[in-house]
Image 1: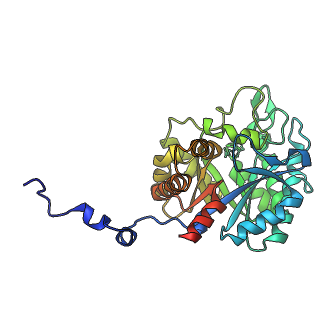
Image 2: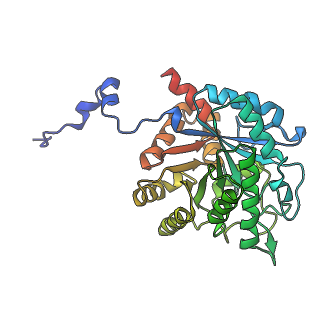
Image 3: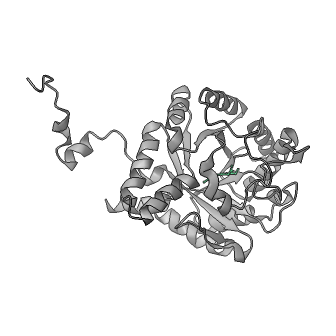
Length: 327
Ligand code: PBG
């Protein structure tokens, strides 16, 4: 006989109603986080060339943007600031009147219940573009984590719900947790970029956030793409230091890592960041009519969720919310 198995897998694929009943993974707007770039200088606002469809906003535009995102059913935004002034120590990053504190307040007044997450790093604020304070041509870990604590407190005191440290410094989560607690910000959560690779997929973001390193690269602090066991060490350490949520970044090339981290810590919420290069490579193909945008985007996000992510940071968040509402 040509088909000896009694089980015919095609039976349950016969139409969309059946496929819906046996579907294992469902994407929802409630899973998604929208990143937003906010600029201090008006001349820096507008479309980002390397990320077709994504713009940088001024603080005065941001309230309307955040309100629309909340209205689309997206529960959270992730804010990245682009300051007017940079220096060697990234001083403007911890300014309580700086670009991110201003942005937090604008978003909060426009969208009372949206979860406001802030990226806590120095690379957009330093003139050398590295994620910390430099000494002898190297990022000096311990002065950097003290500064990250100050940055996190400035965000928390302006109303951020969760701070998201992305600098990949050792001890950064513990330093931030202590700084927050000492400043009576014990309700502020930490979404740690625990597993962040030194990835070429951040290329377009470095235009968006104006944070390309001016010498060398980030491989002395971000992870080697060849390593997966190391992701388990990073995750465990960040949990011990007080992280509330873990993140794997990028997402699509690291689905195995998402799966491993989720399996190792099934009781911890896990985020995945579908980064700028993942966005731009799909957009570039879509612009040439080589792929269908909606299908490609929904497939990529479903795969990230299937791998084990509980929440996904994606530049398509509010667009996806619109598509899911239609269907
Ligand atoms: C800052 C930071 C980066 C991203 C998020 N936070 C850039 C980097 O580490 O070089 C990348 C996000 C993206 O590519 O979408 N450290």
